[in-house]
Length: 326
Ligand code: NAP
Ligand code: G4F
Image (tube, rainbow, N blue to C red; front, top):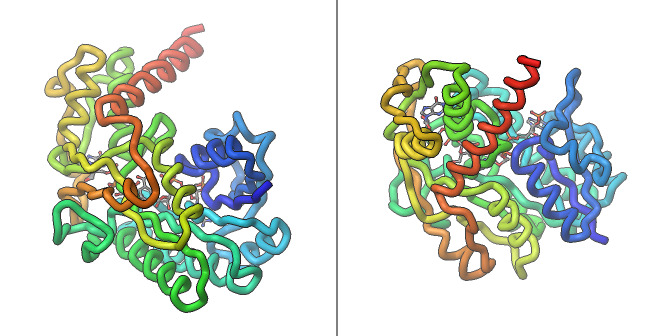
């Protein structure tokens, strides 16, 4: 039975990846950072099947100890300060975790067992102010946020440890992927939750930032399978993972509100407080290499994703409303 270590297991992707690897017969070890409150919301349904251990990407010795004790065959480095706006207000922390954290884990692998396979959660945010449309593995990076800059570092240090030490280190350049487990601060979940609050009469409006920004949005459950496939490939490499389609925040609103019979024009207020100091206007992937070499394809299209997220929040908000009433 192979063993996988997932950093960031309490996050959106960590929870889907853990489910997927358990289904494949893996022993799954999940690294969480110490917290004074519960952070198991996304994994409580599988918690009994996981080995949860404490560690932090800030803390090199915790990473070394975890690798020595659990001897994983594969490490999936999903932990990061992943919210783009916070990367302006906490730029140094973002660099410490999202950039240098990658080196700390790679160093731990090099010291403990360089045969461990490594997956780095790289991001389409690295393409930023895009210099090519669509974006592929060879497209030059032009990051537009401290988060994007940190991810560029994480990507290149992954490539460097592959080339310097022969470590099986793969970099997955994943475009935005969403789900009902997405954090509430990200725009897709903010919209889905906002729609549910309005439909249930608990809110009157939804304040958003730039409605014209375009993203290549897919379903997180599909994308974690691409991560695993990268580590089963015959050599470590970089792969773009996305749907090959792009949609605006406005289109997301239109479908989300329309799904419950509402017109977004009556509820959405564009609020400059949510604009960013530098925006990523357009992302669209060319996932041909992942299709060709990994046999990976998304199973959920844009409309299905939006409707899945709205349906999940409609149920959640209804439950909370009932609990409050009764
Ligand atoms: P997420 O929900 O924000 O999860 C991030 C995880 O990192 C959480 O488990 C968080 O723990 C953990 N973490 C943060 N700082 C840490 C630290 N110092 N030490 C240890 N753990 C720490 O993010 P996600 O959407 O699942 O994304 C997973 C990864 O893919 C991230 O690296 C993200 O940057 C990258 N990515 C995401 C997307 C996307 O569209 N979702 C696209 C491309 C790349 P807490 O629960 O304690 O906060
Ligand atoms: O949902 P977002 O916050 O995601 P963003 O910035 O694209 O980053 C996500 O995807 C990256 C992959 O490309 C990941 F690496 C990263 O970790 C994260 O998961 O914002 C999407 C777009 C932006 O253009 C933003 O300006 O939506 C626009 N937007 C408009 N109104 C908003 C809002 N974003 C947020 N968060 N909140 C708003 O009210």
